[in-house]
Image 1 (tube, rainbow, N blue to C red):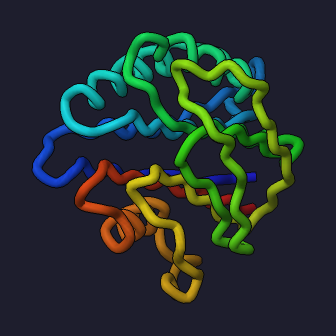
Image 2 (image 1 turned 45 degrees about the vertical axis):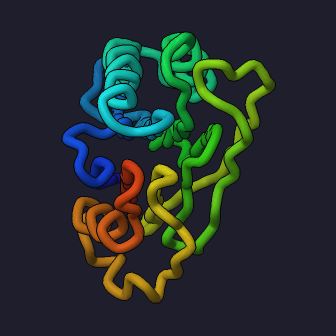
Image 3 (image 1 turned 180 degrees about the vertical axis):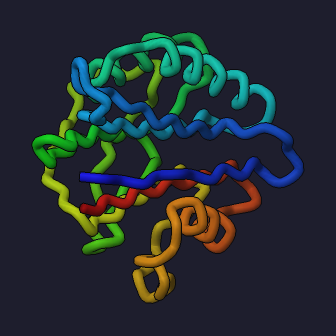
Length: 199
């Protein structure tokens, strides 16, 4: 299965840097150029401005160097790396392109939904950096034609497909940018990522 993904981040009005972070990681099959796993991580540091951006830098440093790929292990590592730093909300989703199975973990006020059928995925209460409870792991299947949206809480997701009549033909970058500009708040960091799957 093929895919296309991109994102757009807009800082709080008047700020130069954002505390929102989106990381897209790919893991290839051994001795192959084929991507086996696609992992998308969205992190929304508490607050905004320089302190939130510095917290995002800590999260980015961990995510850029780790070879962990399961959402559970990635979350555990992220939770450890943000201990004593500003807390965060976040979500991690792994798409296995061989089995067409996806695994999602969400903590705090982040969003994941599908454009394909308007399904919303659940996030549990908590703060990354001080999370101690059992993780709620959600699994589902995905197929060509599915389009997934990830967003920080600076973006309201109370919209319907009719608000985006051209969503099927828009590129992930264009769709993510449109979502933030149309539904993002000027009073918070706002970010959105889009993944499209196709044959």
